[in-house]
Amino acid sequence: MNGDLDTTTLKSFVGSSDGFVSIWYDQSGNGNNLFQSTAVYQPKLVNAGVVYRENTRPFIRFFGFIGSSNFQALVLATQMTTVGFVNAVHRLEPTGDGFILGHTGVYYWHSNPVAGLISNTYASTSVKGGSGWTNGTPYSPTSMPWPASLSINEIAPSSPNSLVNWDNIGTDRITAHNTTGGGGYSELIIFPAALSASNRHTLEVSQASYYAINAALPLDGLSFTARINKTTVRLEWNSNNEQSLKNFTIQRSVDGRQWTSIAVIDATGDINSGYSYADANPAKGNNYYRILALYADGKSGYSNIVSVNFDGNISAFSVTANPVLNGLLQLQVTSTTILTLYSADGKLIWKRQLNSGQQTIPVSNYAKGVYLLKSNEKTEKILIQ
Image 1 (cartoon, rainbow, N blue to C red):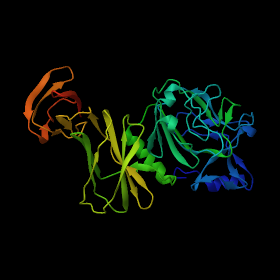
Image 2 (tube, rainbow, N blue to C red; image 1 turned 90 degrees about the horizontal axis):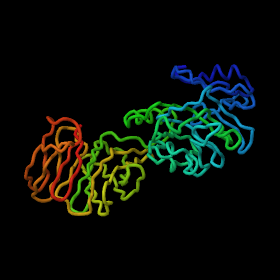
Image 3 (cartoon, one colour; image 1 turned 180 degrees about the vertical axis):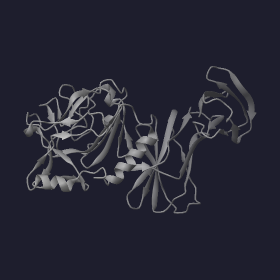
Image 4 (cartoon, rainbow, N blue to C red; image 1 turned 135 degrees about the horizontal axis):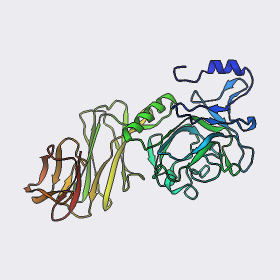
């Protein structure tokens, strides 16, 4: 009903008995239904006339046993070999077993029970080398936490159609590992290609609202920039919505996946109050930054990610925002210097002397693509979009 499971009709049909799932229908129209014709292997949806739920929403539970042929599973007619993105709203028992996707013959999506959702030892290189998110927070797949409570877990394999095979949910290599103790799923979505960040955020926002999951969702109205200031990286931001904001946690990464919190700044409650922080210990090379905002009610959200390339020396210039999105190349010049801009194929675009301070150079007439901005000290790639 309106896209929801008709639990009224379901309970009328089942009565005071138990209800099991024989087919979980593919809603995409592609006919990739999950089925189980053998009654003893069917997962459970209704217990003594009561629909199983997590966070008030219907939930399919699997009651298998570890290392036993007593498993419960829903199976594809033909294994799926192309997976660009998997999104699961599910949970597993805190002391049990389970995984995000299963296969009757291979380890590709294998978990590390209780310790993590994806095994660093047995999962395929494509799965464990991809990108992961739990409730909107990015993780490497092998560091994704065990979903002991209802969670939104997403994985984008590094190779969408290589070493990603799966043929069921509920059992992995049949007798080796089974989903135990009533762990299971509220929703499972498979995409043939990785989602864009905006599409992933849209999906997470919808699921977090519907399933009442406290996800760290992208922030609206927060402007965040980073620039090199001599031997530090200066971070500046402001928010147009300070209502109920508690604090900001600044996080840094050298690869855009693993993040470390480096400072916590209390919110002032004043939308006219800007914020800043100087990172005195940036890593040599690429540094990525983001802000996690925490609200008084426990909800949280992330800013956009900004990056700088720090060479460990006092740089003559730094690019304030890269990629360049608005047709204006913003530079912070630390001392009067000569800069040259080249196209990716080495063609000189311009050479000019710039004074110290904030400099703005129009680039709206330039073709979109990668350019090289050079001084005597360094070369930085500029992406104009």
